[in-house]
Image (cartoon, rainbow, N blue to C red; front, side):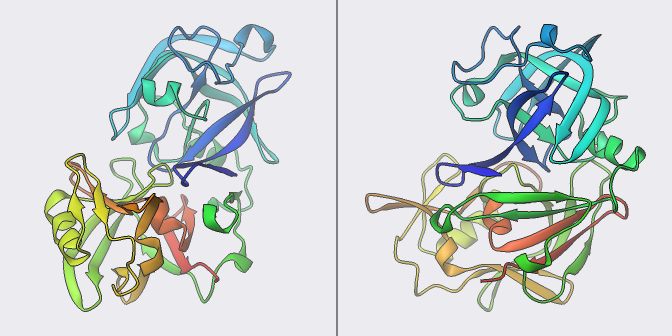
Length: 318
């Protein structure tokens, strides 16, 4: 996996079609669609690699369309088809793929060519199709119905890895802690029994999703405001906060699942430092749940089990 700029997003190479065309796709546990820029795209980025369906002998068009809008209001739309999809040593035959004919400016100006959605079926923008996750499970191509996620910090070399069918024990310390997942709405949704800063509780029984496709840790506004006050952060009016660049005197941001606590350590509270003006690693949105994004995942190894379903968490080995 590669990470972009200030660990904004993590992407890997996925081969589509026959012969394979290599695309850079964001592996996203917060969505369920597999889509990418195509040569039929009228509004796509100039630097994006675009899939050419006419050059794939295994591509079959489907007379259906898709349109997906994400939590940050970015969007993509286009047509459907089936083709061979390969990532790592995995091959999925006859996978539904979505060929973008239009993208919002967020995607046009970015580094990725599309997304691999690794959430559950109810979240798919097109109903009645099998997602990549469902096909991996149904076709029995994995040793276990799990994938382990490690996201590296740019300050420590960046990169990362998704291991499908297993996980890397060398990446974390201690034992993995199991947390039940509610997949009713398609998300990897968990219950955070307690969110806290030091001894101060900022939320109890907080619904949250574990999302590799979101950069920061995001809270409902009232909770975010409490956290910002504790860290002397100021609201920028756009969902983000400016935080003191020196946070060494502050306690960590902690999340407790049952009897086990995991943290975003103090040094991770500053997302980036732009010439002495620092952006906080937490933000807010009007969504009815919190999002444990890459900021959380960079300090905590997560195994996603889509058989049970559950997530298993352990602190990253320092």
